[in-house]
Amino acid sequence: MADVTPIKTPAEQALSAAFAAARAKLPGEGALAALREDAIRAFEARGLPHRRVEEWKYTDLRALLREANPLAPAPDAAAKARGKEAGEVLAGVETRKLVFVDGAFVPELSDLTAEPGLTVGSLADALAKGDALLTQHLGKTYPTDDVAVALNTAFMGDGAVIRIAAGAEIKRPIHLVFAAGSDTPSAAFVRSLIVVEKGAKVVIIEDHDSANTQVNAALELIVGDEAQVDYLKLTQARAVHVASLLAKVGARALFRGFAFTADSSVVRNQSFVHFAGENSHAAIRGVSLLAGKEHVDTTLMIRHAARGCESRELFKTVLDDESHGVFQGKIVVEPHAQKTDARMMTRALLLSDTAEADNKPELEIFADDVACGHGATAGALDLGLKFYLMSRGISEKEAEALLIQAFIGEAVEEVAQEGLRDALMAAAVKWLEARR
Image: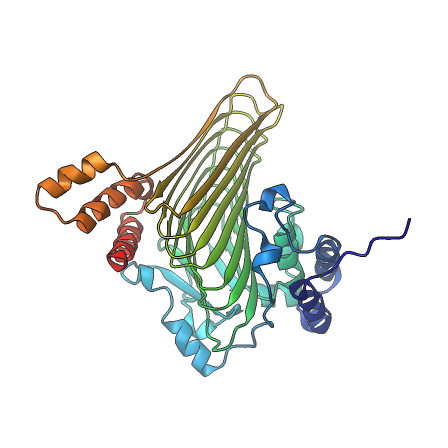
């Protein structure tokens, strides 16, 4: 039988050609360069993920990514000026900003003042120096065969490298702002590594305001024993945006995550969380606000590999017009992860007859002394409540807005920091006002 030659799409061909052209210029040697080579071979063997790959059934990246934009050039003065304005959702919140424009770190726009226990740098510098932190952790936080992660590993150019020393408590949230500065369509591959050592505390915000730049982002997060990490992901993107969170949680640690997505064209936020130590807690929540023909995919993989851990997931999606929301969540409990307590819930609120919500929560349990559950709902606004509000003199749109705020409020209220919580609700109100 003759060998079958897979047909490559224009985007797949362009990505392979772009890597061949950029290979010699990408930072990193030795084991780090080998990591890239392994990753590009994995991508070229499998191509972009498509609907016949179960994990990507509802987000056919091969069909959605018709063209792969060229890699973004180094930002010039005009691009940096645009980047300076990004991150406005949290304009009223005091944070330590680290700014990246078109995927490149911009020190002059970033707050690099010293703080005890905090070390901040750029991935490009760390790769060029062969930093020991990278060789120890990069690509090892949560081993996965996901093609989007492989593509990011092959092209990773810049990003943040942050280390929080044992016992340190970082006062201000660290705000990683990823902005688009280029006028022309381009692509950026950003990779960040954050190591939070034993007993340290920090708030991390990953904020993407990427306009028409195609983005493939990945963040590796190591939560040390007895550490506490609050992680917030904000996404506004008018081009294809794929982001991966790869997290490993140590013993007796606390990890809280929240994702807020609005005004975005095609987004896939995927999280891979691994409980590696006993008696830890993770809570991952999120809100997506969709309109027009927007498509947002939230995919979670929670792996319980240690005894006595607890996980909670709650996601709320509001869909208007012809938008499409996807939630895929899987909890895996390994045989030795006894006394696991895991709960997952996703709810979709449909504001039109043409919007679509696909919810797929799953459990995969190999231990016998556990408490696990999941649920999913999809429905319209409660007409009885809406009528009650309107009968009190409230307009129809205002009544809908109040009910939508109450719907998403259950998830937003779980954000521990008051300032961030208020900023998120203000962004949601702004989205609702634009809908009227």
